[in-house]
Amino acid sequence: MDAREMKIKAAEAALAYVENGMRLGIGTGSTAEEFVRLLAEKVADGLQVQGVPTSERTARLCLELGVPLKSLDELPELDLTVDGADELDLQLRLIKGGGGALLREKIVAAASQRMIVIADETKLVDTLGAFPLPIEVNAFGLTATRIAVERAADRLGLSGDLKLRRSGEAVFTTDGGHHILDASFGRIPDAEALANRLNSIPGVVEHGLFINLASFAIIAGEAGARTLKA
Ligand code: 5RP
Image (cartoon, rainbow, N blue to C red; front, top):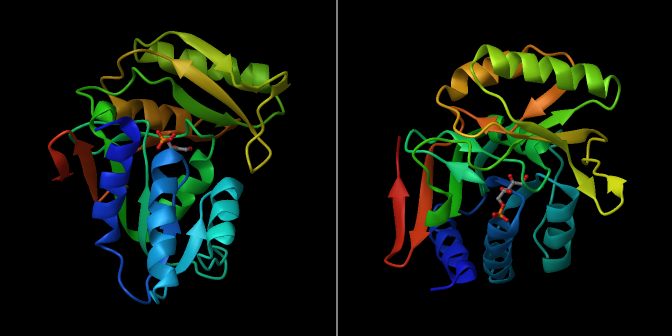
């Protein structure tokens, strides 16, 4: 099974949790997009759902494929969100934001009764941190924020490169108009402590550590899809 087939397997399994009439948070990234394609087929067959997209990119795909959309202000309470992840551990702590949508993804996940993470087995790790942690920052005072992040990490014994994300020649800008620092700290033994410290830095808009948000994960591998609960 190649990587795309595994993503489709995970997306198919998540689709089984979607019921008629649901208000759905719809994630961002290549795995979430497989979910959107399968969801669109069900919608074409008569399934009625209302989706809240977590990015402009996801919104475009949903509109192209005929998945009905609402804004989070129109539907502030959601039944279920289905989204991918860059990494997850056995306690269902996630690193997200590789696609740059972490802020909307976290807001949408927090507004949902349940969040299902869909991923292929390469994303499952013992300890988070091999994937650089995306930290969404305000453009104002970027250097001061970078120093504050370095100091916060240092207090936890973490260090590493903080790379300002680029898109070609330009600095990458999120849907919310912010920038992203990708932090290569390596292993993050205490994700909660790092999340708390990052939360207290004013220039940090949001970070990609998702803790206590995922209800369960569907992990696809060669042997098929399995459910992972914390
Ligand atoms: C976007 C995300 C994605 O869920 C994450 O990057 C995984 O993407 P993919 O399914 O393409 O590996 O957090 O901000």
